[in-house]
Amino acid sequence: MYAVNFRRKHPLNKNRPLIDFGLVGLMEPTTLVGTVFGVMLPYFPKLADSRVASDVALVHHIQNRLKRLKVGDNRRFGTFPSDDDEKTQRRGTIERRDARVLPFEFIWPLVVSWLIILIQSFLRGGHGAPSAIGVTCSSLNYWALTLLPLTILAGTSLYIGHRLRLMNRYKVLSNYPFDDGDIHWIKRRVLMFPAVCTTAGVAAGLLGIGGGMVKGPIMLETGVLPAVQSATASFMILFTASSTTLQFAINGQFPGEFQFDYMAWFAFVGFVGGFCGLKCVGYFVKKYKRESIMVYMLATTIGLSAVAMGAIGVRSTLVDIENGVHLGFLGICDSE
Image: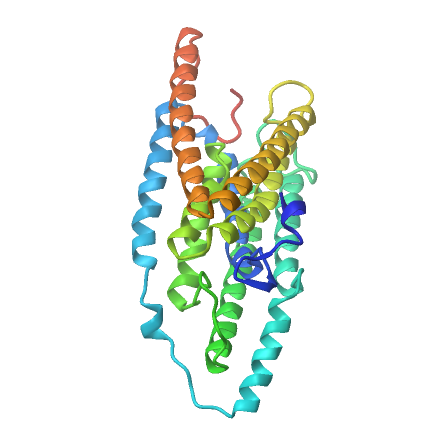
């Protein structure tokens, strides 16, 4: 849905894009880190109820984290005396920077992080797929190729967080008029957001739920406007879903001989569903002038996903029991 949201503007400031690229740059690299472990984890727990338990535990964990994220922004940030002309010049610089449709300093870390995960998957190989450079599964080189690139992604997220803190301080010093829903970036938040997003990535790779379903409530709980949250989450899903899908395809983890037919089909269904949802929800939001409709839709989707996960998990477990399938733990390199 990025193509649809590309030219849309912020609901309270028509000079700013609807997508919060700074938020994306902070949250997405560690989400991709989580997808790597999420793709690997299905070979450990085979009991379906463990997946459901992980889903429930994930929700409770995020809720507890979000309660701690709420800080008194108005008490922490003030203004500082400065020359009026100087402040006006600063604000003009900030407004021109915020008005960019594609801020390069936030886009390139996403592209680099995505490419790192893709190259890592080719070089490392995994379950059902040989390494492109002959690395043996579960060897020292295998784990080095798994862990070392992820430190780059974590460092990228910390770098973006540092930049956001500096930019936030610069805005405060310039008496910049913050819009409702803007996040004040403090040290605690630039550390907590990436940590929680790692969990979102694990959920995306392990449970098959969209990372945006986890990160959406995070943004809403910290005061991000629903329209901004929806567009920002859609942009992040572009990277999360494509990375996870390619990892599964490279590792040969889709059923059948042809891996990419599954990718094409679900990508098409996801696009159609997302487009229809965007248009339908957007229509009702404009008609009733209530952005809370998007929040209700998100909550409903998460609830239905939890129910569906439980039903599918129980059904799969019963089928495995009937077929005598091993329900215990498997190694990463074991065949099912």
